Image 1 (cartoon, rainbow, N blue to C red):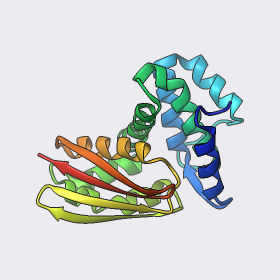
Image 2 (cartoon, one colour):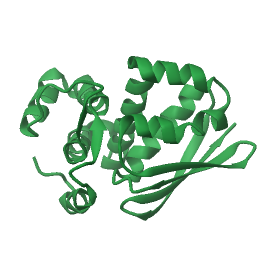
Image 3 (tube, helix red, strand yellow):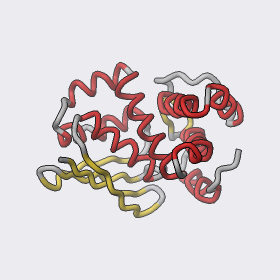
Image 4 (cartoon, helix red, strand yellow):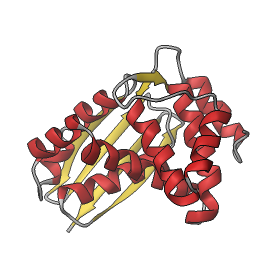
Length: 196
């Protein structure tokens, strides 16, 4: 399957090293999202087309496979959700929700983070990402009483995907907020989070 933006996908795949991995739960979250919107058969077909076998949530798999899945999913979901960036955001939200609501580690981390305290929650961003991927840095800085900045370096996934993840994380913390991104490069972006 060829992504609608195959040039960007190819450039992102160039940043992936053979040692870079993503936990299976991110794969399963995206496949479940496809099944939710397009049916189980579509999810199985896409998985087969990408050569993915049975994926176990807490096993690690090549980041290149995840990146291909993410872009393929965005292509098939875009007509359902409005655009490829919206599809990438939906994939990010699905991964976050699967982590916090379906995994033992995620549920434990949610309890540690607490509710209605986004800075406390997002100060755990490096730990949460290290649980899911073994690449990049994910730093958190408080900017004001209801504003913080996250800086991602060495993370080749698109900003729209992370916007979806971070928006869903705000929801998990129990606040209403918004996420804006500044992209510095394919593997370097800043995210400004504000909440009420």
